[in-house]
Image 1 (tube, helix red, strand yellow):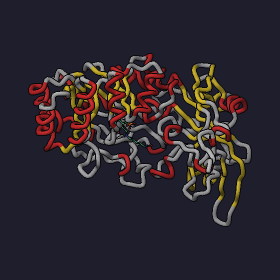
Image 2 (cartoon, protein in one colour):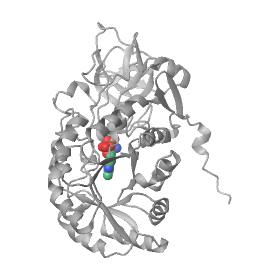
Image 3 (cartoon, rainbow, N blue to C red):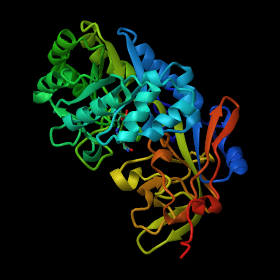
Image 4 (tube, rainbow, N blue to C red):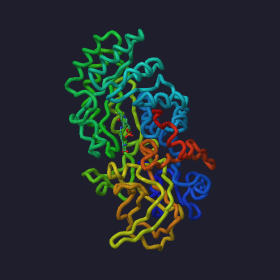
Length: 447
Ligand code: LLP
């Protein structure tokens, strides 16, 4: 949504400029990425604090028409410095594990503003969340309601819960990140929700505090959100009257622009039939806020990607250029273990050289690939890019969401550093792992 630059020398109107060329080099805010790479090494994730804050504030403003709480979806980027940035803005958090709850607490977030989602919460996680005093569990099944009731009974408390409703709306997104259709494992079928609330209301250790929905991720049109809200409204009214619920969470899922050349609505970057539109937070809010006003409930949203996605890049260096009979490969030092989205979702990430290419340099088709021993280890295939040579620095754009958070040490590649830029300063918010870190928790059997 808030794309910072199209990589071809023009900027998109109305957007922030946290990544832009200045004097021939790509900057993040006021930090030259070439200089930064010389200090921190590559590969590395680089995030712009100003961009994250700008996105958060825009969304907050767009939702001003209703009482609301933005619960940042921690799974998108869970570095405690990012969580701390948002906690200081007053954000709540949407968590899916005890680990994420630990991170939020560590980052100074308020557990009382945390919703706990996910289909497989363990007994220990439920207990921990109750002890820390979270806002509510987003409950995904009747079995889970019973389990939460049991754990709460053991602690002698009432557990705050909201049921996640599956509204059976098509979000027109990639099948792996569509969640609001009845064939998905998430939530409780719309038709059964009223009966589930009635049954839950009889469980003595539950406090029916809200209702929740989430239809998917990387949704680039307002229509599915509006459709889902429309479908939910009568049910939500009924739950408010009957059980006195306090909030309606409309989930996350707002998409961002990954490929600026498609942002005008041309065919999409998914291999499916989706198209990449440009859904601004203002358009999103305009589609749902008027419908929600009359409810008289607090509205929760759970955005992840829209806050952090375009605020981050993966900085990588070309190691080798290899020409085969049919293709030219640029082999870079980052791999699919550092950003798995292209391999997993066939997703498009814009790639730009850190040194601004001369305007007349002729583009050529290349594959940008990593060093991992898998054919799926690529960042771009048959991509037209300016001439690239060994040693060139590249920025893989829009890597702030589901980049570091989904990274692994596959091929025994240490996890990358994360760098947070703020104005003309930067801080290492996670250091680069060492080979020693890789084996720290392993041991030889003593037999
Ligand atoms: N709420 C719930 C219940 C969710 O399941 C998710 C994401 C969110 C909120 C936040 O969604 P967002 O605003 O970030 O779209 N790894 C995939 C995305 C998986 C999304 C999972 N759920 C990717 O890289 O595209």
